[in-house]
Amino acid sequence: MKQLERSVKLKLIIKKCHICGQLDESTTEQEKCNSCGKAFLPLNYFQKVHTHEEGKYKDLFADGHDLHEDDLIKGLYVLW
Image (tube, rainbow, N blue to C red; front, side, top):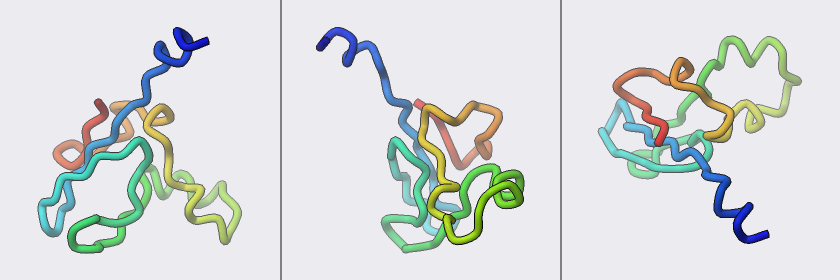
C-alpha cells in the first residue's frame, strides 16, 4: 500500500503575484496572494463560471492534477 501512495505525485502550482511579485506554491489554485492579499480569479474562469452553480465560487479553483500546461498564464504560473 505504501508503494502505491508514493507513486502518486501531486502537481505543484507555482504562481507569481502580478501586483507584488511574491512567488507562492500550492497543490491547489490560490484564491489570494499570501503577501499582499490580492484576490485571484481561478484559471479558465470564463469557461467555468457559465457552467457552475451560483454560490460555489470556491469550487472553481482547481487542483494541480486537474490543470494542463495550456491552462496556465505564461509568466505567472508553472506546474511542477
